[in-house]
Length: 136
Image (cartoon, rainbow, N blue to C red; front, side, top):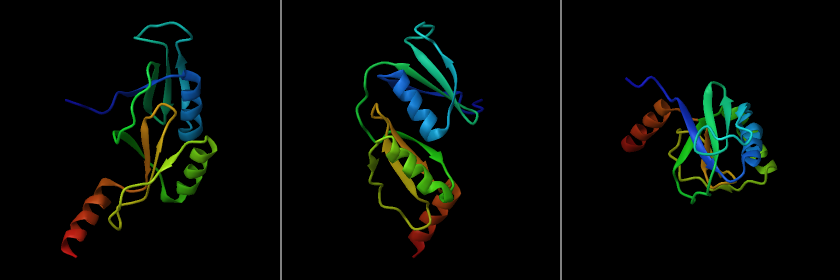
């Protein structure tokens, strides 16, 4: 039985730049650095975002796509996160058209073309919004 997510791994060109990204945007705590050793397939760093384990490993750049991970934020923090993203010189992407009530999102790529979303809504609110949209 699946009990949750163990960890999420991102392949990055530059471990230090990725560390800055995760620390500045997500206030991630760095808990491990291989420091040139390779216990896995390449050099790596581990971070915690709250209790979520994020691994970054050195490798080749990925292509941009809509594949992404979305983190939940409070709507009151929307502008704070937008400013953090802009301060790192990251491009904020135009979001998709939204149904009223499903929440707000900030989409942005990291330095290695991974797409992230910061979202203010919940699954329950989204499903309710979709249901109302069909009725109206």
